[in-house]
Length: 240
Ligand SMILES: Nc1ncnc2c1ncn2[C@@H]1O[C@H](COP(=O)(O)OP(=O)(O)OP(=O)(O)O)[C@@H](O)[C@H]1O
Ligand SMILES: [Mg+2]
Image (cartoon, rainbow, N blue to C red; front, side, top):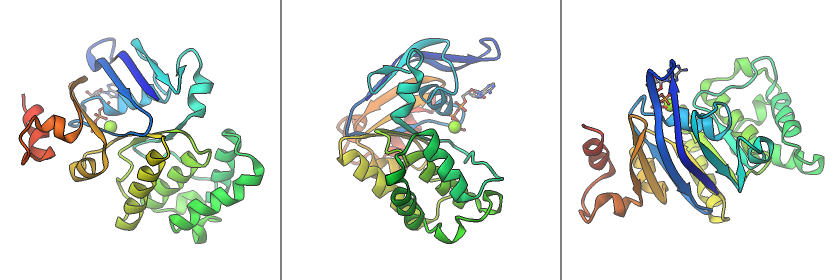
């Protein structure tokens, strides 16, 4: 579903190597957790997957499409939630969702039902006719989530999606992620909440200074030491 081949990206004319020859294959049906210290290269990788940044080197295949050669086809399969909700302040919630439904060509007979489904789930029904600039951070995050998922994309790409969500919304999102993958779809998300990664993810990757330094199931990362927590593994691997 998502194949990352030899991906590299640097900033400031090569002075900062943000992503360094990264290889990763995420399969259909998987929830993949992308972990790493601040500045490790998670957001840079995610922005290249969704086509917001061009790699210096390497390729990304989404649902069979190279995202540089066939960007539109690749993007149709992606639902992207950025690390800070980038929603248009001067639209109402409903205008924003209708706009997203237009962009992603959600058929008009399914639109209302889908929009209502997310509005009810995230307790946004009462706010939907207010301008987004009046929303709290969590409400913006939830309307961004709804907008990203309206077109039922096979691959969810989420950059720290639980940040700012209240316990109920965060619980619902985790449930949604599980259900999505149970249907054979794929979720790739970054997080700093190791307990969430531990409980939710089928596989975990740890990026450190642009390099993928570990990848596997929790058991594989433990290397036989059953009592090892993800926190310990993470701290040991990223200490050097
Ligand atoms: N626009 C930019 N210009 C210059 N350097 C950048 C830019 N964006 C990111 N970087 C640098 O690239 C490296 C990776 O940053 P990135 O945002 O990908 O990290 P991250 O893993 O998402 O971190 P965090 O956990 O804090 O979100 C860092 O050294 C950062 O300073
Ligand atoms: Mg980031």
